[in-house]
Length: 364
Image (cartoon, rainbow, N blue to C red; front, side, top):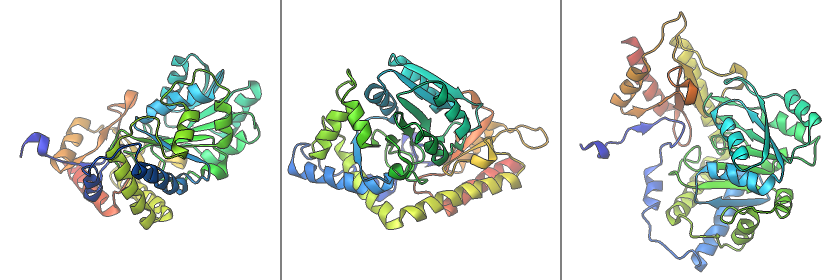
């Protein structure tokens, strides 16, 4: 077998595995993005996506990585100043994006592996007015999930401040409840819990966020929320979208509906519980706050109980020899942790096969 023909099962925090039947959707014939067929498909996708976000408001998509939505959020919804709750690499990235857009951007920071608490957010909002607060729901670099419902409750005490959420590795893997929590923007890449190929992003936008965007100058063009919302409401994307992704998303949303969101969330939690039990049985420790561990991504310390450290390169190689891919630690945690992305359409049984391979490697 040629190297480029080999396929190892992806248990990294994205991209994740895509079902063969969904991959087949990517090879379907193209159609015109201004055709009645496209108008109908856009309307159908928005209707199917709404319950995944938990919203009856605006649901949109764009052919871009989710990092583009970090920038679009700032350009559209932050005329002056944003507050960023940072606890790892991706929440810190959003802070840097805001600064690169020329905004005033403050941060409330905790050490990697910790989460942000309501009192910390309330204190920052009492001290200064912000156009928006930016929260990373699930911090993939550290394997923790911020307590979004509790943080969102604080924002309701500050009705002039928008709540913007990076749901990249939580959407379709954990409850989001956009409308119930009072979120104003939430976005996610499709190559994570939605289990689709990379290169496409979905997002939800509140009505009040859309009204605020109308007052912000220099929003850009392709990712102008006002233009995008008007276009998609009519079934007409601003520019030609990735047609293969439309087909694949349409089919995958049907699969998610058949499984049921509640069952999908439970399956992700069962996989997370299985990894944690496996770690405890093998003298390993999770990296993040044990009260707030992610249901979709496990960050595991390479230093075992008793002080001995794993050979991370050997562990990754053993996984690959067994037909699986897991991840090294991200950013400054490279070498200090390894990561298992138990997200998307993986099953507990398939995860167990990976853990058996890793356990054999640890025994050696």
